Amino acid sequence: SRPRAGHAGSCSAGGAGAAAMAPGAAAAAPALALALALLAAAARPAAAWDLWALRCGFLEDCECGFGPDLRGQRGRRAAEGREAAAECDLAMNLVGQPLVRQQVLKGVREFLENRNPVKPLVMSFHGSTGTGKTYVSSMIVHYLFQGGLQSPYVHQFSPIVHFPHAERIEQYKESLKRWIQGNLTNCGRSAFLFDEMDKMHPGLIDVIIPFLGPSWVVFGTNYRKAIFIFISNAGGEQINEMTLDLWRARKDREEISLQDLEPAISKAVFENPQSGFWKSGIINEHLIDFVVPFLPLKRHHVKQCVISELVQQGLEVRPGVVQEVADSIPYFPEEEKIFSSTGCKTVTSRINL
Image 1 (tube, one colour):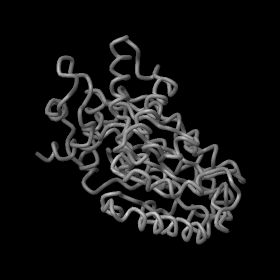
Image 2: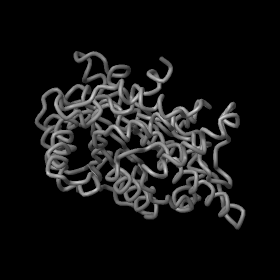
Image 3: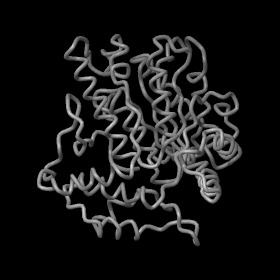
Image 4: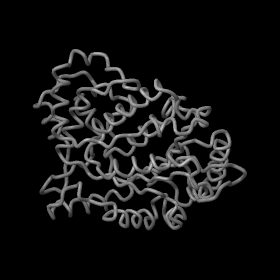
């Protein structure tokens, strides 16, 4: 998952909320100009975020960290600056993911514009490693919560860290249910991120089903304004295969629709006994609002990641270096070598080498 949320200092977005340029970046002004020119040629513009709706549509939530109170003209100017920064963030750092931009922006905006949602927002991100799943989830909370991932109202779970032992699954279920219930009681506008769902013990995640459905209150807690995001490599193989088939049929990735991919993803995660969603009621009861596929990245997408990383490190953007890093990454299939096997995940380490 490429560059972290909040590092939009290399963009030209001004106003409040735009991040400051990293130390040393001023010395790389020619490199920055070249990088922006290359990115402008390669990247399609991202859809704008209505951050007035995102951060200030629910002023009653401000007491639990859901953005500052930005009422008035000054507040609107600040929100516009954040909107520009978020748009810049997507354009600079999220490459080759038209479906992600469409689904995530649409889903978050519509959910937050509804003052009385009937259920929490539930999104599930699927795709191979290095395609941007973790980056997008961190960007969402960065722009919605003061402190981003460090906010006390943002909760992250990893099966390897939090649920490592299969024999303790019943204990994990009880702990997870109590944790979510307690934190939603503290702040109904909380976010819960579940990483590496493909490594979650099957059956464990179903304990949170009562928190995901279209009920008004559960266990005495109003939870309808919460956000749940599941992140998984499961379905990545199917996404890659279908994207490759469409490429061979001479279809552009912007022509790929969610309808092309969603059935295969759902089947892959539901029928895989190694997946945390195996035979899960979350899938069976259609509790996920948005299944978001992350497509495999082509060579020119990897080059965009290299350019972005060089700029963020304040390094000179030399075409030879960009090409060398891109060439050092493995691609598939073996004959055509179209898509990066690791997305942009290893770009930073390869630049250092």
